[in-house]
Image 1: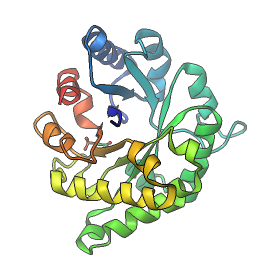
Image 2 (image 1 turned 90 degrees about the vertical axis):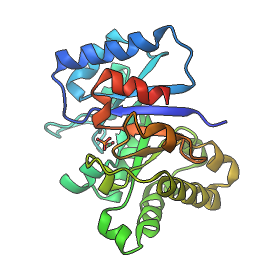
Image 3 (image 1 turned 30 degrees about the vertical axis):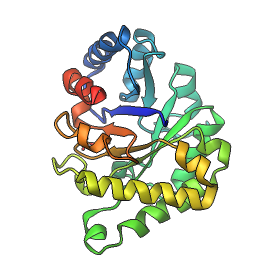
Image 4 (image 1 turned 180 degrees about the vertical axis):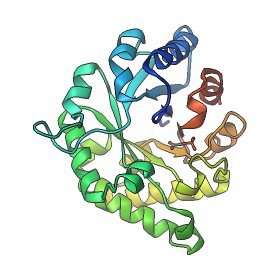
Length: 250
Ligand code: PGA
């Protein structure tokens, strides 16, 4: 059985004081409950220190949304993986489509970032996914495979065991249009097969594959019910404690 995981990507939302309240609500709700899923929240950098002190990470784990591809030094405005580690962060989202498109993060940069994440003994949540035009042109499998080849294929087996891969079709992110359970399953099965061809079945069968893109309380159960969908990376719906809790329950 693979670990079930629901991760919340808060993006650039909530003030620090609001974020602490949200994190505490989620932490409090799951504190005394048996749950089948690992829960991760990824608030903005400015919130991490306080939230790390306010939640129990055996219950809700803490992630960041990005990090620098440099280790340290004269890089004004950047945040290093070591800094995140020192705060108690466990996970870092790498390769989100918003970083790829708005900040021109290439596969080469993303590979460097993943290296820094592992060097700091953190774990990456690596995102991949196609834009609508690529799907319409029937290039979506090829696009996702290239994204995997340029980053994930360059890692070793022990690194693969520490990561999560999130499939996030760009056309579904923040649009209210969700991939159908069949579309999600088809791509997740493809990703697992691609990983199996390179690293073998054992690794492929153990790696958690999350779906992301307009995942909500009303569609989470059906998406998570697919064989190769091991949970979700949740944007908008992770900003309301009740919605996020409902998705975790699904
Ligand atoms: P969304 O975002 O759930 O708001 O579509 C998902 C994501 O970008 O990770």
